[in-house]
Length: 413
Ligand code: SF4
Image 1 (cartoon, rainbow, N blue to C red):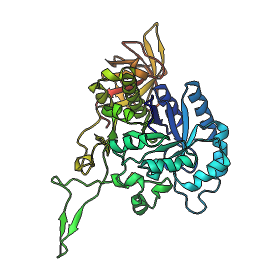
Image 2: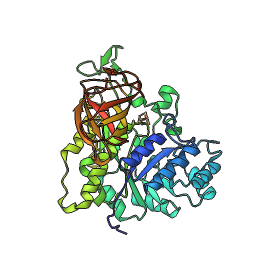
Image 3: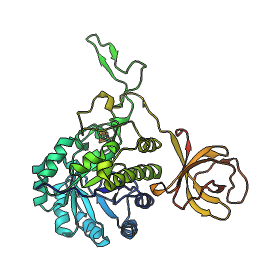
Image 4: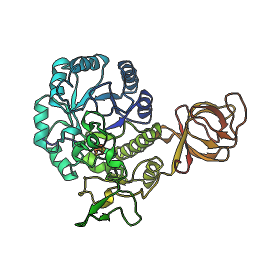
């Protein structure tokens, strides 16, 4: 049942309609979103049916797909309304739903038989027999548990014909495939019903009591607070391994991430995948791609479980050891070729004299310059852009396009 290697899908997170469009503009083949129910990100900007409709239309204009995550664990009565929900998704033209609970899978298959069902990573599928089981039940794709190794991916793909989706970038859970109740205990929010409060990433004081009741502090040499958080996954340097070992879809985690994050990470992975596919035999990883990734805010990076069991270095027990190098400041709305003036929408503070970088989809725009001057909407010169979402004009040293992004050197405050 060995599969032939084909071009993998680059699958990006989209917490809002704006992020959906940006992810597609920057190179995603597909995006995954949340609806108003049945998902695991109640704090992400979940889509109304109207927004989904607009998202599907936008995606299809760009030959991309939209999947909806409906991967909560349903307790008694939680599944109420799921049949109507799935029918509506099918009517809108959603290309697939990501589900883990067998109750929701069955409801979806009965209510909307044409809607493609993908098994969520929450279901912890980590062997070929499990994939074949779900395929026999009519599922088209399985998102593997993040705990699979590269060798296991190879074995799975050689013994199963169902589409395989794997994570390539983003946050990891310290619990097995996100099956975690830490948040339930710490904040009374059920992680498996969309309420995770990221309790593993909080700062704790760690100590033990000896026989006499004295505290023995385990907080670390500098008295640092203790966190249970894992560092983030980054498979950018190992994409050929994933593609050659049978991954059909490469998934970036992070529906709650910013447009800066989505545009940057999608851009880099698009470039690396296309470079590899253009000439696999002579493919060479470009270290600048990793520098690009480090321009956005994230935890430190590792290869997760793919090559070895994560060690203590893959946990964030103390403070971050590496920081992002840029701060997102805005996006380009328009450019006047005659005057070489760009209109931008500001997102974060910046000032005249700051070193700023413009970048765009597939780096058609990519240059640095200093802010020479800028004007507000009333045409007044200002030294500092103070209010988020202000419209500004400024001269640029190279052509820019609507949709390009701007960041300044220096980590976020
Ligand atoms: S608390 Fe941490 S480990 Fe648990 S589900 Fe949330 S992110 Fe995952």
